[in-house]
Every structure is written in structure tokens, then in C-alpha cells.
Image (cartoon, rainbow, N blue to C red):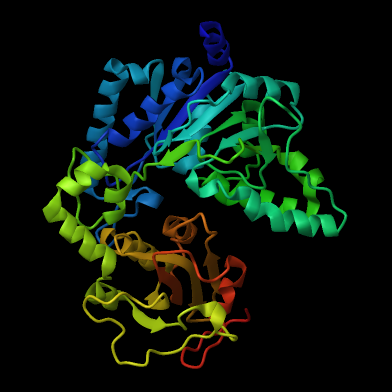
Length: 469
């Protein structure tokens, strides 16, 4: 076993990227991630590079936007303290054995922070990890995966590990397989190996994965013409490209990218998302973050905190009416959009959408007028993200149609509002005014199939949405 770990350490460098979050200066999240490396064969012994991304200070008229690395002066102090706290862990904590820190002086974003670290990687493989994804599986055969990648250098460039949101991948990809097979385009999911259960992935997830270093340097973070730009997430660029190519090219298109899931049967998550934006430090409970309480506090702690439990119950059952009305005009949709043949939006029957203590209608629209940056700022607000709603689509209609094209972003079932915030944040420099229609629902499975989301934005009777969807 010790010899195997040495072999792994000679072949893999672990790169972890971190950046400012609301949980700073707490080190709970990153320590949980590094502690979890002990569960994965050989990873604890590997050389590790922890990249601290830079940041921008918000101007006087700007709000904090963590997804774009924009923070306040107070948050700068917290982030610098976080760095010091982590440096103490590197010096004294066994979980941070063989760890080096790379401090970036400018905000680079995930992809370019990774690019900066790759200059210091001298192994054939990189284990790329995000600072809020911890391993839960203890039987990952790291050595077998590396040996398989060595044997198939032209086929396998990436082996990703699933979190809970990915365990239904085989069901999600089924429609693509059927469509390709009908066109006589081969697309075989399972990789033919008995030791390592791999299936073809039609995407590139930034969450924890093993990647081939020469592929990274040549394709992902090349110094020449690069797929990803500064501030991007790799999955938002390369991931979308892979999905589009595989959807029409099957096996032949996939062979160019070589992305695979480590996918044991039955499908089980290897990762847990800690969510650095909501993680609560040192046992403190923020009443505006019921999600964080459910994810990060044990049931015993939760039930023993009776006074705070009452607050949590209130926030999980009732949306803050006055808060939402300050920023949005609210429209109801039929109780289930898929029961409405035209998929159109209808006005509420009563004057007020909310009543104290009453759960919101299942699906509804928030209307907002402003710039992309202004909307992103609102969606990033702590109180908005604590609301018991899910955001599933954003449609922006420009005030001046001659200046800009409409915006349409939707989420997959495994994604959340952070995915939409990433999309919007790429348009922060777009100062044009839009009328945004934001499709939301109370917690629960989305009533509308993702492929039919646009039907919720077709021209309705009461809301004039000028688009050619």
C-alpha cells in the first residue's frame, strides 16, 4: 500500500483553488476538503498547490459580487485573515502535508488561477479540486485510474467524480444516446474495462477531477489561443463546447475531448458540496441561511437549537414578501406550466400575491428592470439566496432592441442560481437596460421540463415580452 501511494505521488499534483467567500476568515470549508484527501488512495501523500485567487475592491456605487471576485474593504480584511489562518494549517496540520501556497495578486477567476498553478506542475497528471468539494467515497482506485489513463493516452484526458446532483447522469444522457442511434451515429457510454467503471461524459465539470497535464496545457489553459478566458469557469466554455459537439458527433466528437465519469454501479456520489458562500463558521447560525443549516449542522445540533429552529421553520415556509416587492414585480403562472397548453403567464386573481404564512404559488415570474450587473448584485444578496425558492431561467429583453440582443439563460436540473449568476457576471460590462423575467418556483422538483422552459417566456396576454423565441 505504501509503495502504491509513492507511485501515485510521483504521478499526480493536487491543485486546489480558493477565493473570497462569505465564510472568510473561517477555515472550516477548506480544512474539510483537505481532511477528505485522506479518504482517496494516495492523494494525502501527493504534492499540493493551494491557489489563492486575487480580488477587486468594489467601488463606492458597487455591491459585493463574490462570483466576480469583487469584495468590500471589510471582506478584504476577512480574506487576508483567512489566508493567514490557512498558512498556519499548512505549517502545522497533517492534512496539509506537502502543501504549497500560490498567492495571486490579481483576480484571475477559476480557470486562470488554475492556469497559474499549472506552471508549477511537473507530474503527468493533475488532481484539480475546488475548495468547497470534499470527498465522501473511500474506495476510489486512484492507481488503477492512472494506469488506465496511461494505457489509453489518446482516449482518456479527464476522469471526473460525481456529487449528489450527478448520480442520475445515465438517465439524463439517455435522450442524447437515443437521438444519435436513430441517426446511425455511434455513441457508446461504458468504457470497456473491468477494473475501473468509467462512462463517457458529454461535459467538463470543474468539480474534483483527474486531468492529463499535457492536455490541460495544450487545450484548456494554453498560453496561445485559449478556450477559456480570464474570469471564466472551464465548464462554462469547454463544457458547453463538448456538449454541443457530442450531441451531433457521438463517439467521434467525444474522442477529441476524452472526458469520463468515474461511475460505479449503482451510482454513488464521491463528493459533497460544502457551499463556501453559506457555510457557517465556529458553530454560528445565520438565520437567513436555512440551506446552510441543513447542509452543515448535524441533526443533533440543529434540534438542540430550539430558538433558532423556530426562525428556520419560518423562513422555510414563507417567502419574504416585502423584500421581493422592493426589487421585483411579481406574476403568477398556472399552478403547473405543463398543464397550461400555451405555457403563458397569467395575472394573479387577487390583488396581492402573498399573505402572511401562506406558501407561494408553485411557479411564478419575477420582473426586474435594470442592467445585468444590477440584477447580478440582487441575486447575490444574502437575503435573496435565503429565500425558499429555486431560480430556473432568466430572459432579458433590451429596452433598446437596436443596441442589444435578448438574453436567455436556463439551468439544468442539477444547477442552481449560482450557475445563472456566473452567466450574468460575464456581462458585467454590459450597461444596457433590460427588462428581465426570472422564472422561479418554491422548493421541490421543477414542474417544467428543462427543454420546455422557454414556453414559459412566450408572449402572454398581460406581459409584453418582445422576443422571437
